[in-house]
Image (tube, rainbow over all chains, first blue to last red; front, side, top):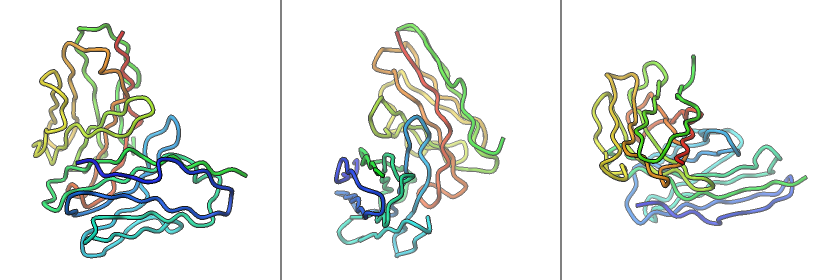
Length: 111
Length: 115
């Protein structure tokens, strides 16, 4: 089942912070975060694994609450280059490898 | 090349024709995914391969869609009797890690337009 992201869209000024949330109705094995710029392929940002291991981007952080089946992506001191659509993807606890993405959150950073 | 390669990059076809989309993953990547992205929409899961077996085909929208993979190499997604609602960008991604545990590297996609 598709994870639910919130908010759907956010507009920031450079230097402001943002949080994007991802929620699943099922127990999870891992949560992935990707960013897609218009007309380009999605690019990996972060993966959070069950058990707390976190791998990813040094300027962007994320949390994974396994009990609540939720993840949040934290963008601090946003830059113009952060603009794009952010997708969370989830793999269920049985880890069949099936990675399903949410509907996306569009982030626009203005000067 | 170093990245995931997809071909064709653009395909315009008439309704009812068959199309084949190809994906060359990064060498050594055992996991391969196909997604569909309609204009302004999210990434819709189609199928996942681990090696040349497909543990999960549940995302294929209908029996007009099929996919295969040769070893741990090339994959083809075939759409038979195309319909206008098949118009979308079809994205392929590969991963070195077993599904769910590692970074996915996406290709630039194949844009399909069905007239």
